[in-house]
Length: 139
Image 1: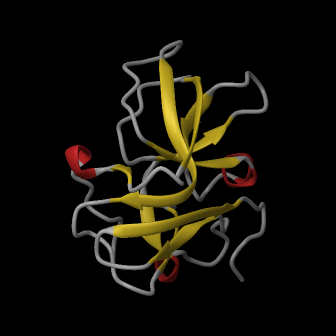
Image 2: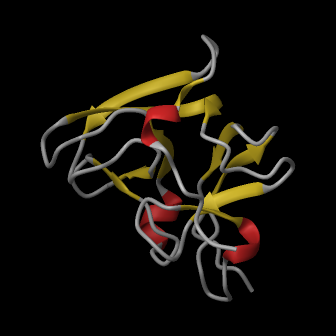
């Protein structure tokens, strides 16, 4: 498998119970990317599963675009997030090791990648977002 293919226009909070947070981006970020809060500068950036700082500080999935450093961003931090039909029901999704901001099935992680769970797909279009940030490596 590989990172899910995200259609930005489809990604949104699925209902009013979805928890949203705001921040300042530290780089350009597209809707649907996994994001972390950089402890060094307090900015939201794209997360990657090859970096323990990224996975240990995972905060969620971008719900708005940020054109670059210093731009405002909104991200989902908990609850239901709607995607295009990119998900597999019952699959656990994590921060991708292949690409910054990517979202991948947990089975895609290789030994020594860092595991940060984003959530579980409850349908082909819904991710039950419940981030579990860790600096644990896959054995």
